[in-house]
Image 1 (cartoon, helix red, strand yellow):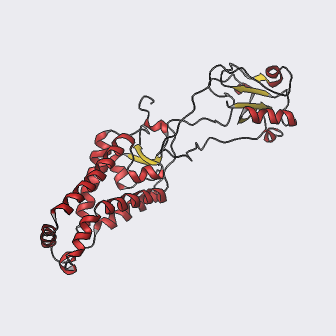
Image 2 (spheres, rainbow, N blue to C red; image 1 turned 45 degrees about the horizontal axis):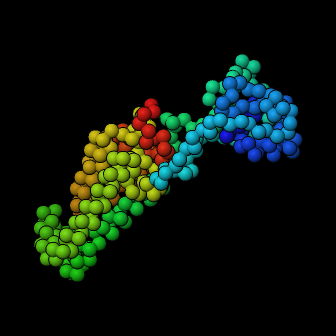
Image 3 (cartoon, rainbow, N blue to C red; image 1 turned 60 degrees about the vertical axis):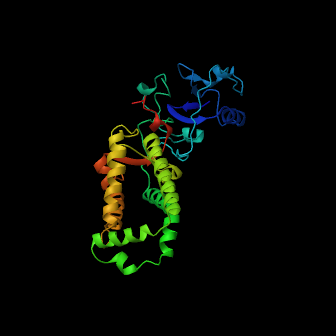
Length: 299
């Protein structure tokens, strides 16, 4: 139960029932203070609720459903408006206008501070968390590709042929090496990489998160709805198109992929919504993950 208190037209809280009773016993809260919690139609004098006793024992019939945060949701997610005002701060505070002292609907209406999280409010993911998510994905991909890489190293490839010359010549040399790799190694690598990509795809479609984003507690959402983006935007543009672009860029002699990654994070750091170039193409933003972003029934 979240209990709000008010004095001189200024709200404080929310507090738990135990906190309220402790403050009543210590005299920090007085019986003439106003109180409100879910289930009440109006603010009431606290003494009227307690029977002028210094302990409140409400009859609770319906407990509000506690929000469950699953793995992949950001446990530190907190609305920037979600602040707590101490009872001590009620003294000496300038009262709000009397016209604002109206009965609450979901939370006290006169409050300057809201203690509930707006479902459409988002907290943009930091550049550091996004970079770490990318690093996690790359490490997992390398691990999945490790059997093939180990077999390739054993062939002692010519580094000059691998890194110089035209794209066609380098691909032809790589193909020659690949043909010398045992079929069981190639099959194992194919299964591991395929499994990794399948898991990534499922996570992206269902949660808007790659595995790296899942670990970091961030996700990609639509810029307009703040929910998981449409399939075409999320998978077609933000995932498949990016993979193709980065794959082509990585084959360039100067590794254009690294340049694109750098440009992406630079753009995101300079943008108020932390959008990189691919976010702008897909009309998405990367934010701290919150359960409300998965609920497509809420607008």
